[in-house]
Every structure is written in structure tokens, then in C-alpha cells.
Image (tube, rainbow, N blue to C red; front, side, top):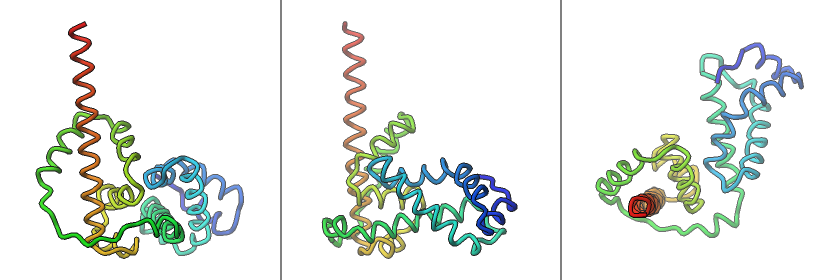
Length: 194
């Protein structure tokens, strides 16, 4: 995402046209972040608007030496996490378990091999089917590169619980991917024998 510094200065000066131009230029980038953490587009849109407002209100804190996309991504992820914390119902449903590390190398290898055979949309469809908390932890760890300690702090859980949710997401993805692969093979066999 390449945003001109002049446009950002106009946004700081509360120029509404510049703010709308920034919204249009950054929409797809920010929306792609929000979609990873929500169940539907409406929730993602709501988070995007909240995050963009936070971005505009804190734009004077942005430092030009940092790529704007990285800064905006961080603001959006922090907004998503803040909203997660505010959602008491979901937090009450979260089971707090403390699990020790497990050796997931074999599971990870199987999932990675299956993922290599899939397209991006198919993978995203599987990730979208994960339970909310496990999906958030999976996205934060695998996609956004946070460590378990950071995830635990941001989501208000223990590191062990973060690890459990990551493992839970991997196990569920493994089942979904194996099921999809089995369906594809079955369809191919039916086509060949027909």
C-alpha cells in the first residue's frame, strides 16, 4: 500500500476529501485484515470503520520513516483485539486451559503438504470455519507473526491456552483438509468409472 505523505498531511488537517481518498486507497488492504478475524463481512466492515476512525484520530503519531501500511496494519490489529476484549459474551465462552507444548511436527507436515495442493480461497474457507478464538490465535500466530506470549497478553489468556488454540486450529484444519482431499479423490474416481 503506497500512500503519499501529502495526502496524510491533509488528513491530519481534517480535510474530509483527503480522508475519503485515504479510506478508498487503504480499504482493500485493511479489509483483508479484518476479514481474517471475523465471521462475516458485516462484522469485518464494522471493524474496518472502527479501525479507520482510530487510524485518523492517531495519524499525527505516524512517523514517516515507517511504511504506512505496516503502521495501519498494527492500528487495525490493535482495534480488532480491543473489540475482542470488549465482547464479554465471547470471552465468557472461552475455555481457559493450560496445556504444555506438544510435538506437532508430524501434524504440521501433513497439513502443509495438503495446503500446497489447495488454492488460497479454499484455504481461507477452511480457516473461516474454525472456532472464533482458535481462528484468531491461528491468524495472529501464523499470518501476522505474533508469538504465544504476545497473543496471550493481547487476548487475556495464558501462553498454554494460546498454544492449545493454535494446536486446536491445526487439528481442525487437518481434518477439514483431509476431508476435502478425500472428497476430491472420490469425485475423480466416480468420474473415471462413469
